[in-house]
Length: 469
Image (cartoon, rainbow, N blue to C red; front, side):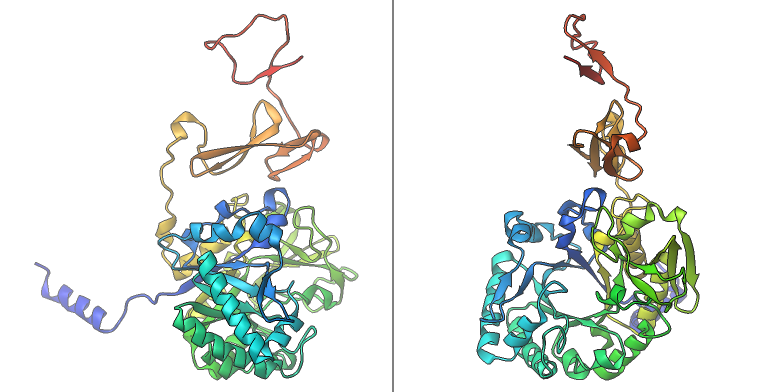
């Protein structure tokens, strides 16, 4: 029997509601990462569902501005590669919902504008949306209109967006679907003209509060993705949306996991300095001004790395390139802000930009920080490998065959998948990609056999045998 004082403490704990708040962790999965090269290419099996309460599909779905009907804009990715079918297979016990995104930077703002302005088109949109949700077994939708009144939109978009959301929420609640909206959370006058914040918050379940902008590298000055102080700070954004929306639990703080790059002008490396534009395309992501954290961290040691104590964000530079990114320290600062304002949770944007192979530490290292702050980090405790004694896959990762540098394999949770580089290329374990063989140090430990030499049998057959004709 417990002592009386222990029972009393437990009773007070229960009455006060001292149990930890249940935060939501949304994981955005940008399907466009399928087009990245080699080590940055992200597959569905790279998703670690333990890091998420909600998985959000992104890229490839938009709106037909003429009819209002939902349309698949990347049929190769979503249909021919069966990415839509994969979504419901990813759902596990700890992931409460699997959602998809309509819109994004690659979709036309003018298409949303025309659909939202016409009641008949809105009705067609709702009908096609519900059909899509049931066909592919999604639990919710994120509307990512970039941006009302902008990029071919009209001034009346601000009003029509609210009308669209008001009607859409009724439809979603009838079918028990989650409705989330991605918004640009900046507090400059131009951005605030996009949204009627009080009404917008009222008519959705969650707000994905973004602070990065795809136009940043083209603004011709160095800028942080999501600083906690200074112009368009995350702190000012959270306070404004909380004050006007009056529903902090609906606000989901977006954490940009990608790296934004710029070309410095005259090597001026302080934030706000003029620049020459976005950084050069990298061999893996091949997008100007952009790379994944997993791509950059592998060679981060050769960069000069700094941390802005006021903005609570890191930055780095090398040669004429300057980058803004997130690390464990900056994410912890944002998680403290999130908790202090009683927000609903965080959005990892996007999980395919993380170090998902663990080249620079633990797998999904940035996502782990979010989970450690908001969830139960113990669910990531490693399970004993069932193949370790056989030496096939002692740990997760990519490894080169010790006797043939053109061959490599992936170990994932004890399972092994074999790959082969193109002729003239060897696998570089440090870069986790195939490189021209003259750039890779390779000690190939073959046992060669040619016709006419003594034959091997099953008892003395070398594992590293190479037949030379």
